[in-house]
Length: 133
Image (spheres, rainbow, N blue to C red):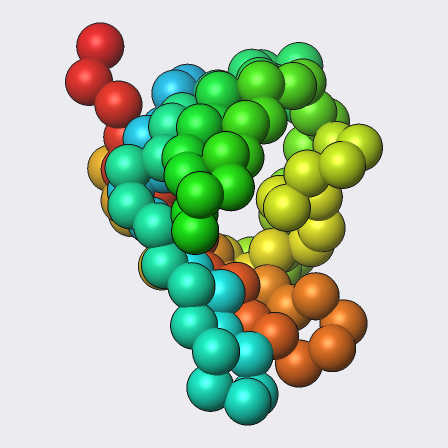
């Protein structure tokens, strides 16, 4: 009887942990992308497209926006990896602003906020909202 109780508790604990961990797979709207440099230069764009995370650790970006009369388009595939013991996610995609390791600072079922740097003290912030099915 003790073994059944322990087994039940383990199953319940595992299920509750799994339900608290939002799933990354699926399509997310890129609600905003922001870049802040130490000299005070700030760029922020909103509703610039979608990013789709597939279960096989690949995905597709569909990004399109204009900034100071420069058109930015990124409709390419990528690979992604989520570190199990941390809140880091790495996107691998040639020629993309998203090609880097990001720290997930807010991780909810329908909303995520990520931060990263470009190696020269410029901080990027990415806000994602789960797309409706």
